[in-house]
Amino acid sequence: KINIFWFRRDLRLEDNAGLYHALKAGLKVIPVFIFDAEILEKLEDKSDQRVDYIHQALDAINKELESHQSGLKTYYGKPLDTFKKLTGDFEVDTVFCNRDYEPQAIKRDQEVADFLEKSGVKFSDFKDQVIFEKNDILKSDQSPYTVYTPYSKRWRENLGDIEVYPVDFGNFESLEDHKTMLSLNDIGFKKTGIEFTRPSLDKKIIDSYQQYRDFPAMDHTTHLGIALRFGTISVRKCVKFALQHSETWLSELIWREFFMQILFHFPHVVNHCFKKKYEDIPWRNNEEEFKAWCEGKTGYPIVDAGMRELNQTGFMHNRVRMITASFLTKHLLIDWRWGEAYFATKLLDYDLSANNGNWQWAAGCGCDAAPYFRIFNPEEQTKKFDKDWQYIKKWLPGKEIQQPLVEHKFARARALDTYKKALN
Ligand code: FAD
Image 1 (cartoon, rainbow, N blue to C red):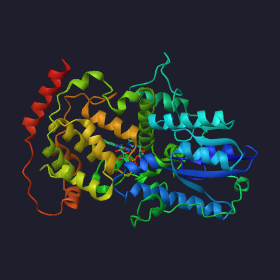
Image 2: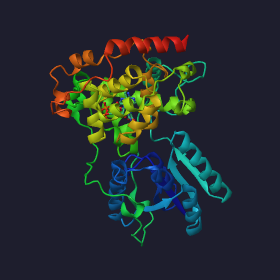
Image 3: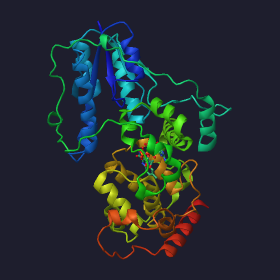
């Protein structure tokens, strides 16, 4: 008999809770990754950087395992079908993995667990992606928090010692057939040419994070979003580092968990406003204006610079994400779901809970959102956060003069009027 460890969004060997438990369970462990055909088929861009990122992370795991006479087995297909095959090929005692909290992932895991149970195989999942999950942090009346500040207070109060999970390389199954690592080509994708580096905690950035994080030209944030998304870095390691170096950075990691628990407790947010009343807003949804926003051609330099940074790099600075999202929903009165979907195709650090939570925050329809009458003024934001136009000039280098799509004062009044009418 053997045990299986199923990698998903925890693509690292060190400090991996589920893997640690698999390796100490007594039987040899076969590590497995499944390229989920249903997810990959939906991606139109066959040079998607995120798929390359995943592949490079798996390659690194495979190489490390090979140096310990083992290897990673990768499959392409539906997870359920893959487990049907795996349980036919091996005598499996238990499948270990780390928990995932997105509605689709919960459904997938339930199907797999049900099948395994019927086949006499145990399914054992662990908390790894977050410090606190599900009902770990509740209000005194046992209901989930929907406001960040009290949630983060309780989160900090509940934080105890943070565990570190070592890797026992001696307990991996030695795989004779090492050709189990599918190439990008095998799964229908291409290399992007980018060599992603191993994520690390940059003391210089984090120590002065609070001072500089809001100035997009300084690019003074960690860029660890993608690593946290795919688990190439352990969140426990990040939190430990934050505790020693920056309270402000810690609060960002708590925002991440805040939105994850919102998605877990209120899955209707995937397609609907957290606050139901906001479903009545009559979005203008002008397609040409949406296209101009996507292409960075709104005539508002800070908005256009942000969208071009996103289109060219798959990243956008947080301050500018807030400005561009506010502009789309308030100035153009375009449904936040359109913007959310566009960001989802482009962001390397795309994460359903964070993207959805922040879009709803910007549109004013989410939990603990800014009140709808607070509308970002792009010019004022530029004066505060990019006064010398350093960020703008970087992404809009030419002297391309664009006619503004809409005049600020007019757009502000129109947004206020539209929201007010819909909410009354
Ligand atoms: P840092 O500033 O170094 O922060 C560290 C980590 O904390 C981030 O990597 C992220 O995991 C977490 N974090 C920081 N801010 C937030 C936040 N507001 N909400 C949730 N988690 C946070 N973040 C995503 O990870 N994925 C998304 O798809 C995403 N979409 C967004 C959409 C909009 C409209 C807005 C306004 C924000 C969005 N964010 C998203 C939040 C935030 O902008 C990014 O996490 C951050 O810019 C990533 O850069 P960084 O890795 O350098 O983060």
